[in-house]
Amino acid sequence: MLRKPEGLPTEWTWPFSLSTITAGLRRHLEDTGLQVLEVESFPLPHRSPSIGRIRGLLVSYASQRGNGSIRLVLKEPLGTTRVGLAGAGRREVGVYQSLASHLPLRTPALIAGSPYGDWLIMELISTAVNPREWKSRDYLKAIESLAGLHDRFWDLGQDLDAFAWLSRPHDVDFEVHLTAAAQAIERLVSSGSPAALTGDPERMVLLEALIAHAEQIAEPLRDEPATLLHGDYWPGNIAIVEDGAQVVYDWQLAAVGPGILDLLTMVVKSEWWFDDLPLEPQEMVKSYRKDLKQRTGQSWSAAEWNRLWDHALMWRFLQEWLDLIAATPGPLLETRARQLEWIWLDPLSRALERL
Image 1 (cartoon, rainbow, N blue to C red):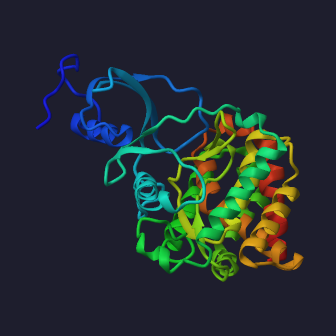
Image 2 (image 1 turned 90 degrees about the vertical axis):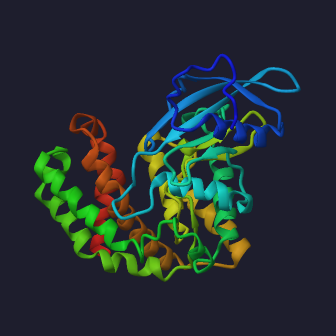
């Protein structure tokens, strides 16, 4: 058993053991003689909303090469994103342990992780560019990387069945998401907030209609080639580092499904948080479709793509945003009332009319 080095506190309060972080750092730094001297927390800069608790770790160590320290990130996901689904942390641990070496994009290094996803220790990636300050070239680069990710696993849905912890929203997990959406509507009605929804009978009818037509909404998405989805792909989960490379993290919503869902998330979530973007959404879509056609040969007519976009929009709102809105404090959500209308409610109403 590894002896606790002098200097460490008598009471160990971290969710991981001393031996676990020591072994992880020995692998990461390729130093079999490394000894951890001290583990302390430090505040991380503001990060966009995520699932669970995130803390900075400063780990001091001694080795044959001399003493040193390294800054890491401790993530402690809170339960599951949906009752009945694999935990968010389990999915992220699974991606880093089983799929990271196959991904055509850069991810943070996993130092150690609970096999159940209760906690993860990862290298700290410091972004050199605030996501709000991204230029059009940064968005285009991220879109190119997204097309590359989808191409790598294009039409390999059956192969991805080997990873049972991945979410499968349109088949195995369909009823789970539908139940969560119905419960979210109940919470909205009970709270009477936000007024932009609950105070407008037509909007509430819209939400009920989405659930009533859920099977019809999911049908064309099920017919698309399945690939590996990041699940929450947008600038808030992509760090641009000093050399200009982009590092993609937060794989807690990793899933199997049609690539258009990742693209829609990229567009809609960027609009939600950043308002005016340096690149028009139509240009992001155009770039993705062009790149994917060159890589896979897959193409859609304008009518086919518009129909898919309608269904992806409706499904994404059902799958994630209804629950998110229901869990957001009313006063905070009221500040986003304008975005709620023009990004979600108006487009959803038009999509339902075309259904």
